[in-house]
Image (cartoon, rainbow, N blue to C red; front, side):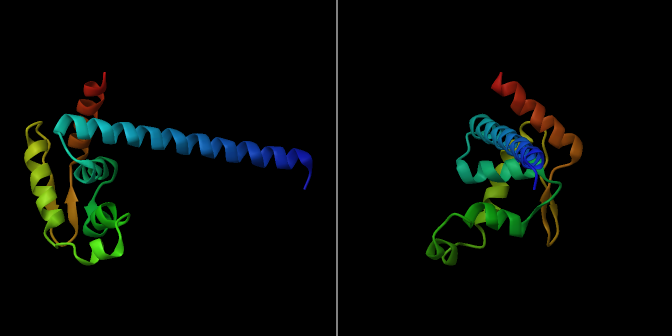
Amino acid sequence: MTPERIIELLEAVLHEVSVLRQNLSSDALLHLAVMQRYKLADSPAQLVVALVKRPILTHEIANAILYSLRPDDAVANRSNNTITVFIMQLRRKLLRDGIEVKNMHAVGWYVGEDQRKKLVELLERGQQ
């Protein structure tokens, strides 16, 4: 491999790292804004960020968000209702801003595209 090719590859990797840093930074800011606006703890705030970032928050993704960093015994002892309770609480809080979290039977939850944009705008305005 030529030195020019190595430099080219290194520049591509550095660009990718820069993009990842920007995405992580924007997600962290969004997460913080959700916690502050809705007075949420870390885990429910992560669920709101997931609702904003993806078209559907599946049960599996919600489980991964809530339990992926927990010790195995905490995962084994979790209640099946924990996510449902979090979503119920989030629905009430988000509805105050006109954001409706809808249920997709046996799949998960979602927020409509227009409402996701509205939520992001609300959160961005709150950070200014």
